[in-house]
Amino acid sequence: MKKITIAIDGFSSTGKSTLAKQLAKELEYIYVDTGAMYRAVAYFAMKNKFIGTDFFNKETLIQTLPNIQLEFRFNADVGFAEMYLNGENVEKQIRTIEVSNYVSKVAEVSEVRAKLVEQQQEMGTNKAIVMDGRDIGTVVFPNAELKIFMTASAETRAQRRFDELQQKGDNVSYEDVLKNVMERDYIDTHREDSPLVIADDAIEIDNSYLNKEEQFTAVLELVNDVVKID
Image (cartoon, rainbow, N blue to C red; front, side):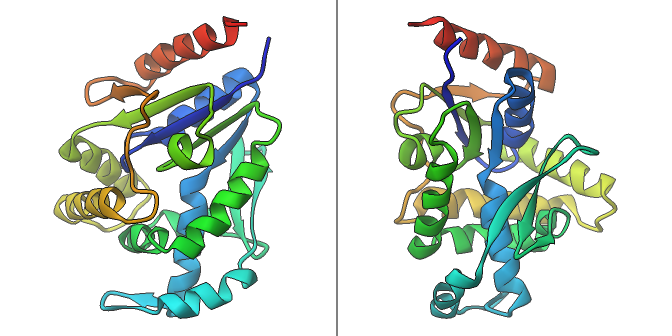
């Protein structure tokens, strides 16, 4: 059975990572969460006070990019690879609403995107990879054999994100999460460098009314169709 590259793009909180993890486990592929990479850089910027509610020192961040080392380390206890920033496990820290408020702004910076895209392309050299993000099918792997673009209403995505944060014990309001989702949508689709768009050959999936298993079954059928083609 031939190995392929699977690119999953889409709006925030559409369940891209959940689907990608399911596929990687089923196919025994490598899974790469590119969103975690951008979140880690945003977290780095926050920690070093390069970004805040009313400021963003882009040039300082750009100058310190060589000091940012990112890697994924597999955690057998949770069943997936976690994000490490300069040797520190930051998987929990990068999933907060605070990081979510800044990640799209950080991802707008061309120098940040160039650094991370280069790393992502190296990860996919040997195929057998599932990668999710905003520009995987358009920039990182434009020749990917299967491209999925995931979407859902802003309200649906905000409710999912709100429920997830509540389960983690984060004290947030649905209104704040919805505002964050809509702001990220605008920034992601309007940035000059690699805006979020659906690739011409991507298959769009609106999962507003699909549960995780229904979605996984539908996409796995698409994978099998591609893999069977010689």
